[in-house]
Image (cartoon, rainbow, N blue to C red):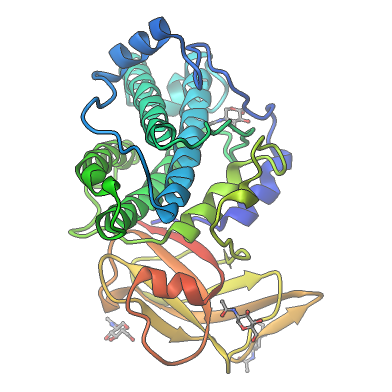
Length: 354
Ligand SMILES: *[C@@H]1O[C@H](CO)[C@@H](O)[C@H](O)[C@H]1NC(C)=O
Ligand SMILES: *[C@@H]1O[C@H](CO)[C@@H](O)[C@H](O)[C@H]1NC(C)=O
Ligand SMILES: *[C@@H]1O[C@H](CO)[C@@H](O)[C@H](O)[C@H]1NC(C)=O
Ligand SMILES: *[C@@H]1O[C@H](CO)[C@@H](O)[C@H](O)[C@H]1NC(C)=O
């Protein structure tokens, strides 16, 4: 059980973290490996890029979501490359004692395999964009709000959980937008399964059951896009993130520790909330979004607000990731994660319970 405080609390702590922002290229030439370097990456990844099908044109919504996906994969390359360096160079908190009882050699092999695989995911997504005449995506600078192995693995689990909720949205879009990208739906399924294998490992490392729940939590592209920006050094992207056609939301911080039972959560936001006009909505598993009232005892100080809302975990929530959001409106149907995102003012609040 763990409270994953929101990305803003995390990014606020970035300043306290020693270590320069991560910059590309990596030693293996990513993001622009030579053919020889690409061969090395493929060998390290245990397989090659797909040569099966590349659409020559893409619908505009598909371009947007591929830009998100590529940026996300590049950020994962940055994260795992840095994690690997921390482990191999025995940075305090990443030394053998901290990673025990995992064997160091096995851990290094596992993480370096993931680095190579994420590089291919990023190059593959970019390849689809490039095949349809879209420009390459240059990496930003990255800063991850962790400074020990345990927190790093929990962060890896959390952003992978978000990806596992987002890729099905990409599949749904590709399958219904009327474009040639429908033929890439199985490729996305293969990426989804691959990330699931990684996630099982991250969970195992924390001594959680490798598989969290029968159905994992869904998401929405704009939630993933908002969450991603917590790891990006503001203003460091050569192509500003604002050029990606997705909204972002103001942060929703979770103040107390969520547990696998019915309880009350304390939230904080930088802004106002209204218990008469807004509600908290949870996405958990593949259940319909669940709406709960905001307790009317909202404490406001300066521009920020603290408030409480029920966290009814025993109403059928899934283990693993739950996404919370403050939405406009107190009634009315919110059937899908995209409905929730469309009404969101603050979010995603990222909750990991076992
Ligand atoms: C690697 O260690 C440095 C120094 O503690 C830290 O700043 C950085 O966030 C760590 N990165 C990861 C991915 O664990
Ligand atoms: C309202 O919240 C404040 C701060 O959390 C608390 O001290 C106070 O007792 C609460 N009042 C009511 C009526 O619940
Ligand atoms: C947990 O809360 C839900 C929703 O309010 C309720 O239906 C359920 O009975 C509660 N379960 C327990 C064990 O309190
Ligand atoms: C929520 O309501 C506020 C106030 O009416 C409005 O300014 C804002 O655009 C709304 N946001 C969404 C996502 O509906």
